[in-house]
Length: 359
Image 1 (cartoon, helix red, strand yellow):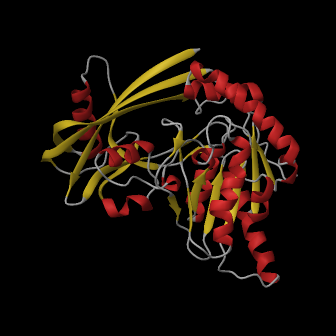
Image 2 (cartoon, rainbow, N blue to C red; image 1 turned 90 degrees about the vertical axis):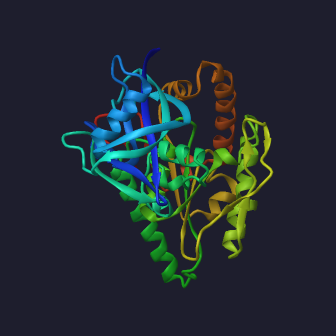
């Protein structure tokens, strides 16, 4: 496996209830997918010969015009995955991120010129959830004692915008049909993004939820462990979909993968009357859950590619889990006929042109 490690250093600079953020300008990839602009912490990659502190101070000045004094280390994290900016690439990125706390000691606010960002501002913490943000903002805010961001506010990778547009069109059609039948417009509308692991469901679902102003529920929180796929659809239906269909409050028990048990506190699902709920993950449109979905999206990719994505993200030690999970997926989806009932099928295997289709 060809692995490239990148170390990036950021600063959480907070004052008067606001945090300093810069806006990454985004880009359009050669295959037409779009990496959407997003708000992120001021910071960036370490250059040869720098210390982490020097990197953070330099990057803050380049992106914001401010001179800062670092006051401590807030948090560190890491992630890995295939290079999704270059279709067909076998390169795996291992990213290590260090977030410092800091305070402004000089300079004036100014936007970076000829860089990767095109805006910088003080964002009130109360407005963070309204912006599309990089995951590092969520991680840092939680480390700083905040509640973190809702899942739909976190951007996560390149998106095929034509697929998002098609999903929105299908949803408009279904809502129109419901209105003609005299269905109450105040109900919650459900979009299910289903398919096997490693196919790209999360990226698509987050873009859909963001564009529709919807709430995102992820099946990863409902699977009761590595052998719990078959149970998850029933849990979703019982705890979330059925209560919402009755106009009642909904909450679900979240599986704690580190503790290998259910977390003690239920997670409320906040969707207002007439709102949209996007459910993402394996089994989100299986069995009784399918009857609650206005639009069912199936996302797939070649088996070998999906496995490479999974191992690049989770590590070789998780291969036995992925293989065991793949057997469960095949059995569940075959028995349910999930793909055949989908309103939209999306193949994320890299090809020169879009492979989205309506069955």
